Image 1: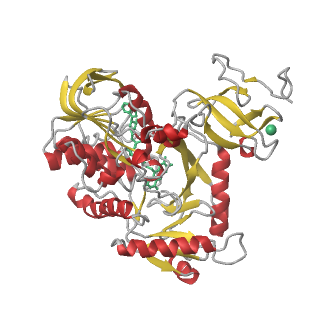
Image 2: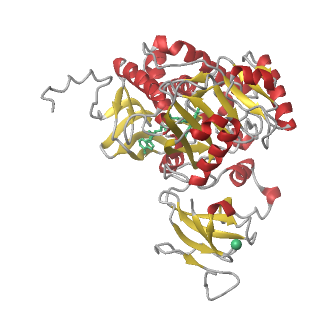
Image 3: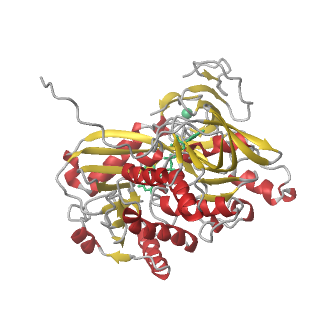
Length: 109
Length: 406
Ligand SMILES: Cc1cc2nc3c(=O)[nH]c(=O)nc-3n(C[C@H](O)[C@H](O)[C@H](O)COP(=O)(O)OP(=O)(O)OC[C@H]3O[C@@H](n4cnc5c(N)ncnc54)[C@H](O)[C@@H]3O)c2cc1C
Ligand SMILES: [Zn+2]
């Protein structure tokens, strides 16, 4: 089971979370202008990265907040946790960097 | 202490050739689908100067990790057609491949536990009958008669309200299926090359003309991808995308028991499915782990959850033990249907997206994919399963309606 460091609640069992798939997939700016191909891309195509993957999780039985997480899809190591709306951090660290939206010091509670 | 010599090694079922510098077609992936594709390319289309490239050992991916359920009781016409064709092929393959791989038509039951389940199940039985698929609706008493160890009392959270039953469905011994195909492929002249990982493709403009491997570059007229969980990785090497997400899917077996379980029982609602292998292990599985993963392992709570469901449905399993658990990497699509057809790259073809339920489809995947590769156009059975359906919107949504997706 994954031990997921929620930015608000600290490390919790995976069973408390809901998986949200690939992060950073914005809703199309002008939906009416999209071709069928572009709609297909938005609806059905997601990256399926083997390695470091930026994904969304929701702490559904805790604080109920969504956040982003960088996780290796082969080793399942969690490399970083960061707020929605923030850009994907650079990889390379082994210990997860947790950026909390509520406490700017970045401490895990 | 014994001084006796070990017995002679039995004959090998296939050669282990080095790759040639060029082939008429190269199949990437030595699982069931790659093997079946090569077999039908050679047998039906006379293409024998071909190779299967497998990065590990033959059938070391999902082929020898699955729980071997074979059935064809899918809801939609397109699915019923291809899975029923597969089932008909399973019925003749032991003889055709001259190999008894223990195909056992012991029936598959899909339990209903809610009013919604009951309605969906009865509807699916009707749809199956219209498509010539054997299907019956069983009430709880009939369920109990077919599988006496099932708990049909209403003392559980989701009592059994009935089941669909497909008598011709069943199980087979997956590793023997792979060996059966491999031996025939080899006899027909197909090179099965293990420990040969495809690392890239050689293209002339938009046309594929070769594959790069850890054992050198191999020229080829055509490439067929049968890489299951790694399909996206190979597509990316070739320069196109697939609407696939790879997830861990786990299964487990108990220690050996006397025969207690005469059929296959699947429950979508409490989420477990169980059969008893020929040797005697109880074989169980359930759904995928929620997250994307290429690790061939998943989280333990998924195992705990399915065992809780199994013990509720089969109280005598409370005294069985988990012997082994394992995981594979399954290639899921959003409509829970496979992709078999052409790709944006000329002379490159893809067979993937069989996700949690492609073992049963092995012979039909091979037959239709071989047709597509040999002729450049789809067989009528795989035409609806083209990659283009995600653009046209002609999805084949087997999610809600096809019971557990195995
Ligand atoms: C736990 C579990 C239970 C399942 N239960 C059922 C079931 O009950 N019924 C059912 O119908 N289906 C079931 N399935 C699904 C079924 O196993 C798959 O859909 C099917 O096996 C996929 O086709 P395959 O056999 O060709 O895949 P695989 O055996 O995975 O073959 C793909 C091969 O491609 C190789 N490969 C990948 N990348 C490369 C590369 N770059 N170069 C060379 N080779 C490469 C891999 O090593 C692998 O051997 C289950 C799957 C799992 C994991
Ligand atoms: Zn939280």
